[in-house]
Amino acid sequence: MLIQLLATVIGLRRPDDAPATIRAALAGDRSAGRRLAERVAPVIRARVLRMTRGRRGPGGLDTDDLMHEAWCRLLADDGRRLRNYDPTRGKSFEGYISMITGQLIATMAEKHGAAKRKAPGGEGELSEAAAVPAPVADPESMAAGRQLQDALWQHLEDQLSNRGRVVLALVYADGLTVDEAAARMGVKKQVVYNWQHKIRGLTRQWMAAA
Amino acid sequence: MSALDDDGLDALLRARAPHPAIGEPELDPGDLQAWRSGRLDAEQAAAVDAVLARSAADRAMLADLAAPVDAGLLDRMAVATPRPQSNRRLVWAGAGLALAAGLTFAVLRPGAPDAPAYTLGAVRGAVKITRSQTPTQGSGEPAVFVPDGTLRLTVRPTDAGRTAAAARAFAACDDGAFRAVDGLEAGADGAWTLVASARSLFGEAPGRCVVAIALAADADALADLDGMDPATAAEDGGVQLVPLTVDYRATPDGETP
Image 1: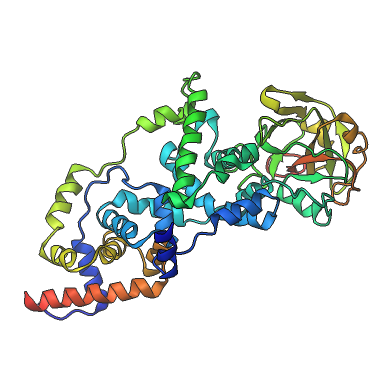
Image 2: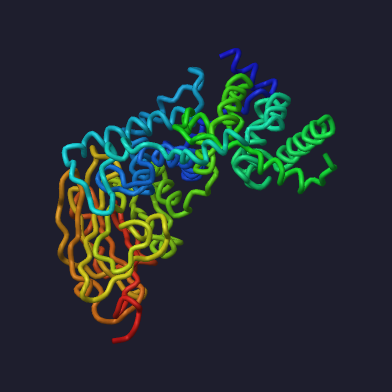
């Protein structure tokens, strides 16, 4: 607790208002309820998408319906699951919501597991969806990718911190714009521009030495 | 090598970027969102950085987290939160807007028992379905029905332990008064389902209509809803109203037969 408080005071992490927002929302403060929904919705969606791989989930529910269902279950029993969140245990509120959502969706999938019929159009049950292998690049592109890992790229990875390598990957490997990369990282555009400037400088340095 | 401008360097870097096989994400989406929100400590954040730098699958998950959440869905989620325990008199101003947005809302009177909370579930029978079978949920677009269609609408309790003992279905078109309709049946786990032909609900004239299921802890609370104006209804009893906005057309394309 003391370490967490200290970390917050010296600015290493943002203070978490989740417990207060949860209490207010469950007491009927609609504004707090909205803030809470806005905070957890991206996490619930990402968790649902990861579990369903974009297919329909248990009971044929689509992503939005599953998100709403998970939310209602989080609110059930006077918000017991939300109230159980304890920031002193070290887990972020987002991490906690993701974990609980995963459990809730898995429970729903178990309940619907008896009906293992396969719907037309590839709309199978969640358990089937989970068994679908992740997309893998084709062998040709994999070989090409290995060839493209040349000395320049290695030089950049060696010189950059992990945060810089994230920007390198987002902007140059994934092809995002600075705006897109900043939005995905949750940082200001200037942060990405600064890293881009450093990456270009390192590249020029390497090219001059080559 | 010759000196390149920024655009030239960027093109070079993109051309030489490795594209390894995309595997399974290593990070939990919640931890990743906490990283995006600056809610991890330095050590935790550095660990996430390291994974993101090498894992395209985890970086792809960032896109899911950064994408805006549908405003209609957020409305539904906010509405599902508990109502205040005090000052239970609901201000009806804006009820018409709520109806148009397909939101659930409650009609409350001090002293009346709280209505159990319900939410719109599956909607079947629409001739035009947007992204899901629940057109007004998430997409914000009304369900399109034609006179020969059969509407099947289910509402479910948000808390399985608190269900409605009584329910009635109503329909209204073009800002008219609510009219009680038949075809509502209780289902499992506290759910209620309305099955009715669109013609019996909305008549023959095309327009913007609302079909709503009113739920209450006791039947008395539902007695006076018939004839209520959906937009400016008087306060009367502890009732949860779950409306569905419908674009009622003569034909699927909106043509006059």
